[in-house]
Length: 331
Ligand code: NAI
Image 1 (cartoon, helix red, strand yellow):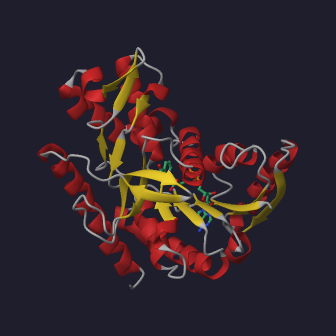
Image 2: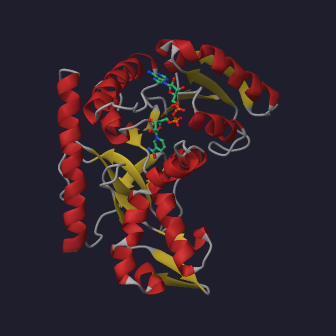
């Protein structure tokens, strides 16, 4: 049976990298047929036509069908996976609250459509910013779908953190495990390497020992990851797209296929019932293990005063974002 996978913002720059990876089997496997439904806004339909032509011209064996549309009903009907990439970009002179408002409306509408048309088992990853709050809105507007099926992307932040540590220790990125991103996908996020492991000369070392530079781990490492998106924009004059697409693939692949024993990844998920004292009712990035298509927050990691302060700060920002967004959509 083919999986129905929806990508929104399908005419945009992240989707341009993402669609190729998904359609060639990087996420669901090389033998799993897929049907892609591509959603964008009406003025982008001509551009989207070109993307569809290119997908056809890739002659990918597992891609059964591509449906391009500006209609949420057509895009979301019976889907198994939703990659919600499309969002209103921040334009010059736009206040943060204007951006929040525009996106709250988009994700309210898409949440309602998911509720009505998608499979109840649909797995949703929100990428469009502000990703955590948009995911929360979509989740609230889709009460017939389990809360656990909604997530937001913080895997790009995790990959950035992993790469920084690998560089510092002169090891390949595959040797760095269990870096955690806590909180919001914003500059208040807390990239945390205190529980991470670095495999060096065949031995598992604590990242703190392998790095052996506490000031860096508590300083430049954190700020580099927090500001990496802005650094890419400054250099490329466009926001991260290739790396964002790769991170979306990593996120959904692990959700569907599971994490290896002893390893965790970071995902924005509902904070209800967490054991880290993060307020309930937020989509907050936690360390999670994935198995059988379900996530579980990794419990029992020690949190020192330094970490506590950073985790609380990003939770506070998320609570403020949530309150502002729900005011706009009248909830
Ligand atoms: P882009 O501007 O190139 O593409 C966005 C696309 O979304 C456009 O084609 C636009 O027409 C479409 N769109 C707008 N409203 C829509 C709606 N209501 N329904 C369907 N499509 C709609 O932007 P790009 O670079 O592809 O980034 C997309 C989003 O991802 C942005 O919000 C960006 O901030 C966010 N992002 C998030 C990251 C994360 O780690 N969570 C990382 C990088 C980007």
